[in-house]
Image 1: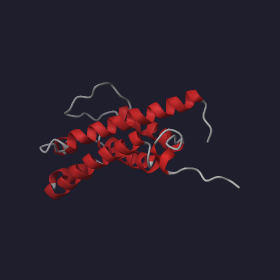
Image 2: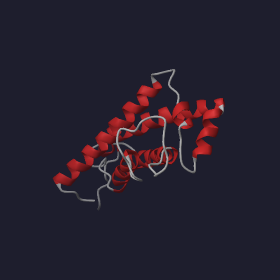
Image 3: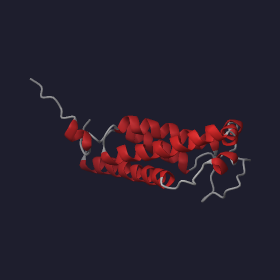
Length: 158
């Protein structure tokens, strides 16, 4: 896929910004032993609320959820920053963001204990980041600027 310099710059900046966001969010959770998603899960809303409450109220599931969440965030961010295995990382990121959205949808009539940093109607920052991750998935740049360029050199055509 050929990109103009402007398109390539925009796509790489998007990949790096989301990569940093994921990596930092994940590492803060990994490096904070007392961090847990319990309050966030108990504050869920929408049709999937019983599922997320079930996870929060089961200590084993909550522990697994916390570890998986922190490390998937970190690894998705790490791979996006490196520009390696970007499409699988973007897919994993979209799944994670989809779960976040399902736990806290911006639908009318749902109120949460934790205040939001804005006013939303259906579309919130989580859904926007999910859409941006879809752009990264659909328009990969790691083969141009990223570790994949060094590791996966294109084969010469005879």
